[in-house]
Length: 210
Image 1 (cartoon, rainbow, N blue to C red):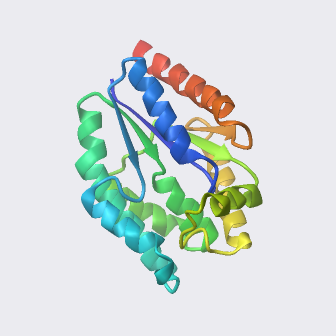
Image 2: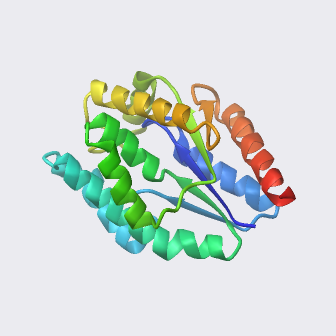
Image 3: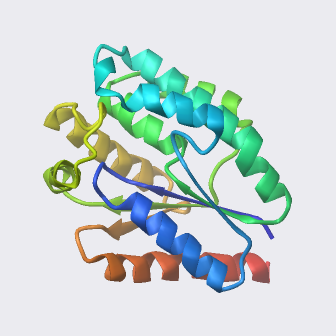
């Protein structure tokens, strides 16, 4: 049984931590789990990630930004995600294409339908079975990023951009409630993990039963 879970949310919401903890818990439960991330997850994708995140590239055009994310995503899908799913495994990804819809679409104002068309082309129509949105107030997430010392080019956008991206996530979740589950990320790591794990295990149990 293959299953594809993505974790999404505003910067500083704890996706990377929760994705790793979730993957660890699923491995203990006996699932063949692959943990990956965007942008990156492959040797080519990691090179693209460095370009995207560097503060030296503040002049990057939003369309360039979207296409670089898409290039990394295309490599990740073909090299990593599809092969693991084809083998019957579970994939946990720290971000996927919904990040581009939220950040480059709602954040930068690029046309959503065009972004969706390009995304469908580069992913071959692959979509997550479950997307967990870790939501928290924009300023709280950015404060976490600043305190963590890993500030990057996307973090450096103004507060209004990040608020548009957050509202974009909420709009995407509301439009596809069968796929999305909302989790309050303004709580302790253990409490968030308990909620995330319960949601994923419920879906996995249902998928196995079917």
